[in-house]
Image (cartoon, rainbow, N blue to C red; front, side, top):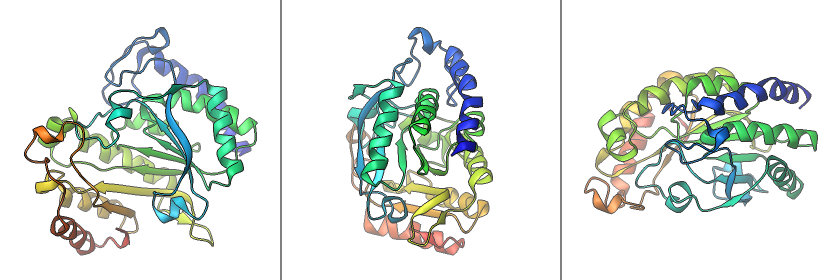
Length: 292
């Protein structure tokens, strides 16, 4: 952790400057968040935490036997209209925390026995997280850090996280710009996601686990199957296979209409078992074999 602490010390000033004209995510709103200005994500300089605690609903390699030390951040830079955490991402339900308070929360999760610190929807608060991580390491934090994100990342931000993040856990949501525009107002989603996942893979490689099967480093990708092939799953999976056939990918079947999904006939119903199985079959066809 000494090396990580040194990296964070070097990067902390860079991340702080990024808030002066925010380009943390691909939207590049260029608002001065240090003065309280807010862009697409609706977040200024404050750190709003929805909840934190041991979480047992992640992939087995992340959850393990003692849980993943999960911190849910309020707000989001993608804001999918069908978000299953709509009250957190869109309505900003949560409690304000200082960098010191978040650091103390991470230490409590480590003391609880959690296998990692799992930062959920962190992209829009990357600067504040880096500041908190520095304080947490000073207090003794020594477990892997997980970057659990939507996949809609500014690759330059991801580059600044090299050596700080141990496990990247991005979504790959869409391959069709029209669907990404309609449901997440992000026509460049697939392009930004691809370049970010390539950078994540360059930094950490394929998912590595210890003798107990607990993830210690690497890339784990999630893909949520949407009704009527709205996600364009095959093109996304082909990209992942081209990146590495050893990629651990969770093909998720839990979609159900949330938020404003009921207003759109493409996604106003749960996904079917047949739709999910078709995506998993294609994953095997292109050589993927880890996860599912």
